[in-house]
Image 1: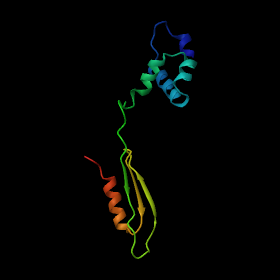
Image 2: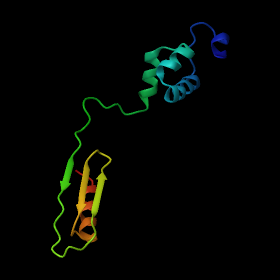
Image 3: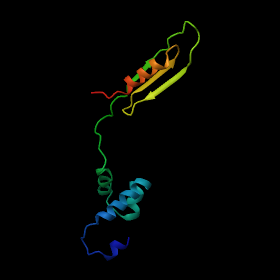
Image 4: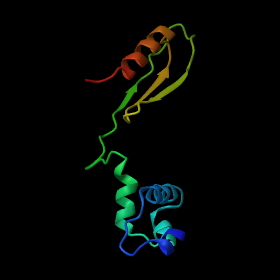
Length: 116
């Protein structure tokens, strides 16, 4: 690192170099970056995660909803399975039987509606 050879003793590492180190740590990991650049592990870790929202505790439990297929009296209709995963982790699996496209669309809209 050229900067180490030219800096006055005790001078802090410039922000630009920390940004480059955090970019390398995202690609190669914290340990290899710390070893190669001779940085403080905890300083790099703090800077790496400072721009990210830190979640404490357990993540919210995923909600699983299963909708059983309704048997078709006519024996026709589209069959298959639809699985939806909400960004929050909730999952919806619909086994399509006699349900029409309008009913399926309404169910999907209800599932994806923002929760208060």
